[in-house]
Amino acid sequence: MSAEARDEPAGHRFARRAAVASMVGAVFEWYDFYLYGIATALVFNKVFFTALDPAAGQLAAFATYAVGFVARPLGAVFAGQIADRHGRRRVLILSLVVMGVVTTLVGVLPTYGQVGVAAPAALVFLRLVQGLAAGGEQGGAAVFMVEHSGARQRGLWGSLATSGAGLGLLCASGAFFLLQHFVSTADIMAGAWRIPFLVSPVLIVVGLVIRAKVPEPEVFARTQEVNQTRPHVLVDLLRNHRRPLVLGIGLRISQTTASYFYTVFSVYYVGVVLGKSSSAGSASVAVSSALSLISAPLWGVVSDRAGRRRWYLFGAVGSALFLVPFFLLVDTRSPVLIGVGVVFGLNVFHDAMSAPQPAWLSELFPTEVRGSGVGMSYQIGAVLGGGILPLVAAFLLMAGSDRPWLIVAYFGALSALTTTAACLAPETGAEALEPLERAV
Image 1 (cartoon, helix red, strand yellow):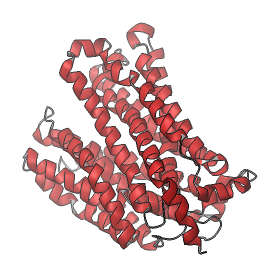
Image 2 (tube, rainbow, N blue to C red; image 1 turned 180 degrees about the vertical axis):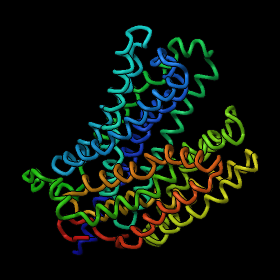
Image 3 (spheres, rainbow, N blue to C red; image 1 turned 90 degrees about the vertical axis):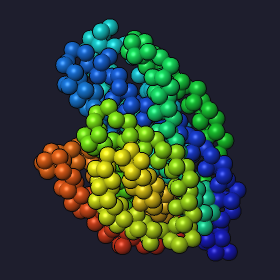
């Protein structure tokens, strides 16, 4: 029996269950992560940083938000060691519990007016822990789902991790929309903002029940006994698998740059063009998040049938070339055309990269270091790409006298890195995920 044939039964047996477990868990966990971001923009500067003037308070609130991104690579390293030595499911359960506990604690945290400087200090600490959990979740969910999938369906099932994150964003924004629609601003500031956070324990319990019913992937189980006796998984990864790690980071850079450009910076830019009160940018992102439930699986299927590299290159090159038309669409000041620009940028070009990404990154690494390799690729690439994108883009916009062409050049340079990585990475679609069998 061929290696590929041996890889298929486990995927067919548990792929749907693993997909549901990973996607539902991702929805709930990213709901928590995005909920913090929305509350940062709307509430936290007024309840945790009241000793500062409004502008400084907003900057301080966003600084606590950034702490979570700094912590994510550390979370990926820690979680990867556990995943490769003790099991993928253990990491997914641990990250879900930690995220749920942290979100609940934020919901009951006393304000600055109640305990003084201890309130923002506790908020920063909780955000740090939340970032560690998110760093373990993203790569862990991707590997768990892909390892349970059949060789010819890994792009499809892996793409659901992307859909789960998008749905989590949609749920978080929806929760605050309902809160703002039915509750007065005074009541929100008085404590009603805590309600979406306190829903988290119920969601986490549901996610845990679903994830606990899915066994470890068979391809990992065949290496687990060996991995538990190997104390230096990270050393092995850095010493023997540097090439796939560098390629994985490179594949991630342009995708995460596009993600944060359209979901964060474009909302700011639309506000600059149309006025700070305009909701056209955030509404476009919400529509795109909903559409990703369809577009991401479609791109996953395309990558299964036509290969990872071809369409990944389409996304990386297309997202860079589309930036000029996007800015021209926004400059028309038409909310409809702005929405068209965001949808094309995210659902066409971005999703062409993000949907096959879990499968391609997982296929680059052998099983014994896959959890660590995929997790570090995700989070280091995120820091180098999207993590600094909003700050750099805002600076370049000011340097260009509010014209976006320096941003276009910067985006193009990052896309060139991903294009190079995609050209150098092997085409791995439909290959077996056998342990210790191949080196990249």
